[in-house]
Amino acid sequence: MRYVLAFLLASLLLGCTRELDQFSPQIVITRPKSDITPNSSVVIEGYAWDDKGVVKLTINGTLDLLAKGEMASQRGRKIVNFKFPASQLDGGALKYEIRAVDAARNAGTRDISVTVDTKKPVIEIQNVESQIDAVVVRGQATDNRKVQTVFLNGEPINVSPGPEVPFYRVIRRSRARAITVRAVDGVGNEAIRYIPVPPPPAPPEPVVKPGDTTNASGTTGTTTTTPRRRRRLRSTVTAPTTPAITQPATGNR
Image (cartoon, rainbow, N blue to C red; front, side, top):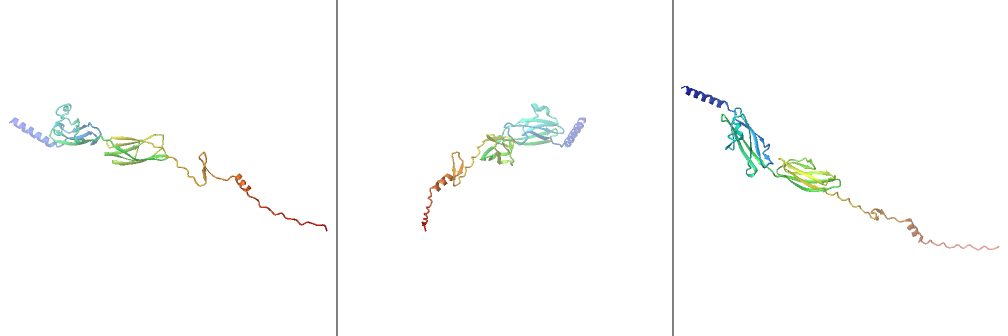
């Protein structure tokens, strides 16, 4: 009878404990920072915590990380740190369900889906206009997900992030022989393209007006008639002859 009463009392206390512990374990993912990562090999890290202690931590309902191995020593702790490599699934997506259970069988779950993105953006140069003092560059950067930033010669361009990002920039001429275009996507993949700096345009040819001549030095001048030529022209004109006037003879009276 004494043992029966002790068993009933223990069962009652255990039931009260289970009723009082209604707090489910919480799971926090610390790595990766985003649901899209440029790393082909992904490691998932985080921790589970509970006010009474975590006794079970399963991955996709099968593998218990606290059953054996390095993490077995954390079984029953209030804070359990976990770390495991992710296996790449179809389409580059990593999907896992992490489930933590405490001593009162309260459970908390966390779903994590990570996509591996190793594709770099694509830079398309649409037009390069050569001016005397500057070079005008126009183009577009595209990405399978999102272009975050575009740089020209190390300076960021004010663009709106998206799958297709047009860019335009007037660059002052310098001694540099190439223009550097760099595009970065949302997870850090980047593409770089170099554009040779075109020579400045040739100056416009001078406009020759009627009456202008070009001498041996390439300069133009106006054709004139020298004074000697005018004198020669005047000397060829024959002056009109004046008839002689006969004076009447004077006689002696």
